Structures are given as C-alpha cells and as structure tokens.
Image (cartoon, rainbow, N blue to C red):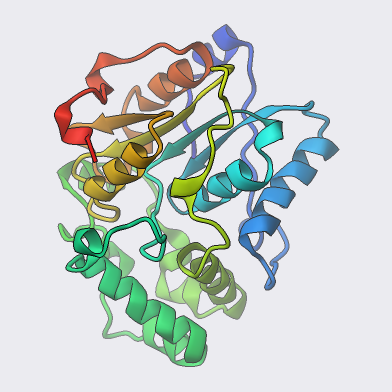
Length: 276
C-alpha cells in the first residue's frame, strides 16, 4: 500500500516522503532471520545511510505497522513522530482480555495459519496455491474482508499482486510472506500496550488511523489498544474499511495531524465509543 500524499501538500510542508521495500519485498533482499528488532534496525540503518538526521517520522500501514511498533520499542530516541494506518494487531499481546478476542473468527484463522506456518510450511505453500481456492479477484469482492468503500477502491488499484496463486508459487515470494506473517503474529518480545510515551513533553505525537468498518482488523480492538495508551491520538474513519489509505483526502489529514497538529473533525476520536 502506497502513501498517496498530494505533491502540493508536500511542497507546502517542505517535506519529502521516503517509501522503502522491507526485507524480501520489491528489490530488497530477503531476510529469513527477520525479527521485530531487525525491522527497526533496518529503518535506522536506512535513515543513517541517507543522512536523514538524528530524528525522523515513521508511518506504518497495515502489515507494515509492526515495524513501526518496533521503532517505538527500540528507537524511541530517533522518532520525531509516528502514525499507524489500519495497523494489524496481534492476538497474543498479553494485555488483550480473553473476553474481547475469544470469539473473534479472525483470531481462529490466524491461529490455524500460524500453526501451519510453524509446523507444516510446505503444506501451507501447497494449500495457498491450489486451484480450488478462491482467487484474489474473488477475495477482493468478499464482504467478509472488505466493506463497500474498500470494494470500490479495489476497482481502481492493482489489488494484491503478491497474493496471486502465480506469485505464491514462487518460493521466494512465499518465503517472504511466510516469515513476515510469523513475526507479525508470533510471540513478541514486548507488549505494545505497556510501552512508554516517547513524547512526554508533547514535542511530537503518535497517531492511529482506523476504519470503523474495517473487517480485517476490528475497530473494537484498535480502540482498546488506544485506550491503554492514552497518549495516542486515535482517529476513526466512520465509513472506512481496511483500505482507508486510498480514501480521498485521508493522507493529507494524516500529515497535517502528524506534522502540524491540525485535527480534522471528520475523524475525531472524542466520542464515548472509543473508550476502552
């Protein structure tokens, strides 16, 4: 998923955006030993090699959000600010009460997939490439995963090319997704909901943006995370699904909130609905 900020806004703010390929994606070399910490160290090394300075902003989207949480844990002194957009959650985070996640069908799907990924990766590889499984084109229209706004967005973007059966048949593609999945949804060395505020003097801020109708990551869980970390600014898109990064005007709202502290009332998080 790309962060689509208008060029006029980039010029107005006097910033530039650096979007990089995490290990195994695009032109970056795979890292079969990837970990939460290695993701943060990759970002730090990239920033140092490009001489970005002592501090920088980090924006994480969907699956890439776990690398952002890792920066908060391992690189808090390097952060000028953070934003998470439709971030994934890990059902193994200790602070989640069992009553909140016990009946979530997504949790059971993740558990089953993790068991295969850990014990039978070859079986998992075989299974995800079978012709009788729904294609990505079918999945992208499935209301179990995407709301109406998402489905409309998917008609205008390439979708998820790495998840096609042809792509998954390539061992390097499957291995990258396999290792990424295990880090994101495996056991973490820390609980994000126990982290300290990296900006105690309000020198900058941490924001989470999420869709109320997100069917990949329930908004109820995202609200709970934000409730445990009251220093996070939580913004909810009323009719938003998982693909809110593509919604018109949202990237601009994210940058203005992160860099200028300008709140867009359309995504206000002050409703009692957001209390944990």
